[in-house]
Image 1 (cartoon, rainbow over the protein chains, first blue to last red):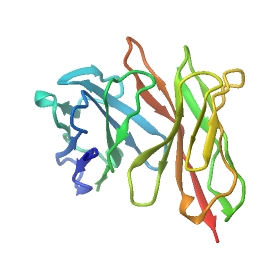
Image 2 (cartoon, each protein chain N blue to C red):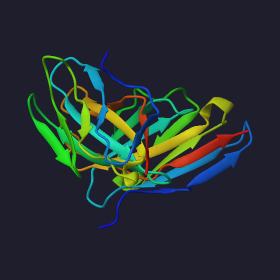
Image 3 (spheres, helix red, strand yellow):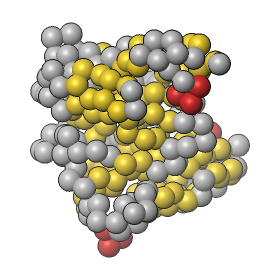
Image 4 (cartoon, chains in turn red, blue):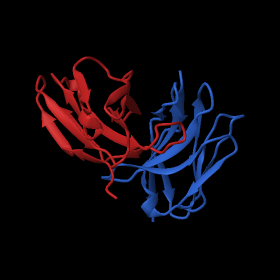
Length: 115
Length: 114
């Protein structure tokens, strides 16, 4: 069974440009999460989809970030316009049920560098 | 709010040494607790978890016990190997309405030398 995949693995962009990250969850997982780790600090939650609906987007830093999950399958996270402080590693995770004891399976991450 | 605090690294050990990485948490309610590991060049992998007080999670020789009285979930291994070199993250599952998100500690880098 394929795991969570993310594309691209690395992205280097100029400040002010737009970048779109993609995540493909494990097949059959209704729950999809985005997290990010900035400058070696703790990994922080961004948002949670249940199927195509946003269950919790309390971690989204500002309106320059837009996440979508069309059809409840893959998800995209767009940053527009990118700022220097957006640099970091963006992780996607998926889970079957979304409850407390449920395991979240992580992708390898996308390393974003904003120059 | 809910939070996780884990010991700062890096932790440097010789092969076959005993490992402890401390993790304490603050949470309302009864979270599940997790240890994730990130090997060089790879993504996060679940190492072990515990879902209620006094549960012990174990995997690959690593163990951690959910201690509600001390709000701790310390990671231990009796004899580390060079291949255990990685970054270890403690996390708790928190949320409302039945759905949960993970709250992570800052991560502890472990380096094991032959």
